[in-house]
Structures are given as C-alpha cells and as structure tokens.
Amino acid sequence: MRSLTPQIRGRFITFEGTEGAGKSTLIHHLERALRKNGITTVVTREPGGVPVAEKIRELILKNEMTPWTELFLYEAARAEHLQAVIAPALKSGAWVLCDRFTDSTLAYQGHARGLPWKKVETLNAIATAGLEADQVIWLDIDPATGLRMARDPNRFEAEGVEFQTRVRAGFLRAMRRRPRHWIRLEAHSSSAESMAQSLAERLLKKFKVTGRASRRS
Ligand code: TYD
Image (cartoon, rainbow, N blue to C red; front, side, top):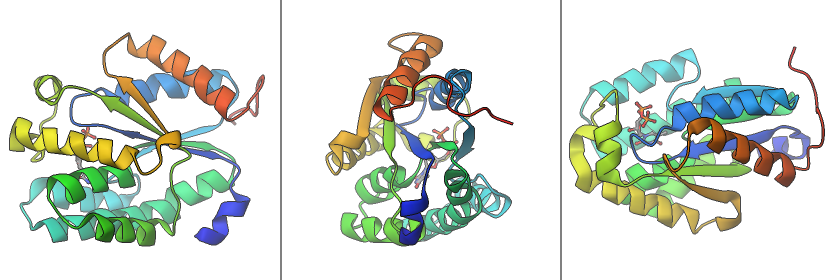
C-alpha cells in the first residue's frame, strides 16, 4: 500500500485512548462539524469496520487467548479493514475517522501485554502496508475514572485499573514516535460538542481547508 500514498487525497484521522474516554461521542460530533464544512467523511472502527473484521472482533472480545494470538487477530482484522474500507475511502478523497488503529496495538499488545514493541511496529506496518494516521486524537482520561464511565465492559476493562494504567503509558510511548501527528485532549474537559467544534477548526486549519470543500453526496 505504500504505492497508495501518493494518490491519497483524503485525511486519515484516528482516535485513541483507554476505556471510557468518550471517543465515539466525540467522533459523532466531529463528523457533524466536518460535514457542515463540506468534508466527506467515513466513520469506522477497529477492530471491525467490515464484516470479516467484525467477526474477528467478536472472536477477540469474547474469548481468552494468548497475547500473540490477540496481536495476530487484530492485525488480520486491520489488513481486511484497510483494503476494504480505509484505502478506498482515502482514495476517493474522504476524511476517514477511525475509532482506534495501530497505536492501540502498540499500547495494548505492545506496552500493556508486554509483547516486543519493535515486533508490534513491524506487524502494524505489514497490516497497513505502511499507512499511518495523518492525525491521531488521543482522548486522555484518568484510567480509574474511565473504567467507572465505561458503558459496555469488555474483557480488557475487566482487567482493571492497573492494566488500563499500563495502556495509558503505552499511548504516551506511542505519542513519542510521532509527536507532531498527535493531539492529546483531556476527556470531559468540555462538552463533546464544543470539543468537536474546536477540534474541527484545528483540523481544517492544519489541513488547509477553507470554505466548503466538497459536498457529501
Ligand atoms: P471496544 O468495545 O470497541 O472498546 P472502546 O469502546 O474502548 O474502543 O473494544 C475494543 C477493544 O480492543 C478495546 O478494549 C481496545 C482493544 N484493542 C486492542 O487491544 N488492540 C488493538 O489493536 C485495537 C484496535 C483494540
């Protein structure tokens, strides 16, 4: 997919964070704000976003498995999602808003589960053919607060505060790889609407979009 890069016209924006930070609400409001500015958007998530990957998601979230199995399943779901959804959307000029991506794998499987960081980076690069986010939005929350706010507990949440604290440290580590591509926002520091509005303004400015770009059909 490296060969895709020169043709990419859309923007790839990923959302990261520990549990309970409110990523999906922020994404919902950001999408509305971007669409008001004429941006064509595609909202998707990992693991998932396409039927095969949604099946892998079920498998991962409902079954105990070794960290390596977990890692390969996330990467398998990602390879499918990238080819079927993300790459075509970017090629068409859409802004792809993706709930979690490769930095979750670094933070959860790499840092929190303790798999070798470099190997996780390598597998991420293989699954994505080298595609990285144009912008990572990290919705940061105190892990204990986040766990209290999480609505739909999965087996990662069941591992408790200590695990979530390691995941958070993993995001800090991932941010240091490409700091200029990251924005860290304090979760629940203002309403999701106003956070999304100012984020939209920041992104439109950063990506130099003026006025209404293209209408969503
Ligand atoms: P989900 O219920 O979507 O969590 P959230 O709403 O917090 O995003 O479940 C996805 C879980 O998968 C979440 O706990 C994070 C985890 N995950 C990984 O461990 N590695 C990954 O590469 C990805 C994409 C997610």
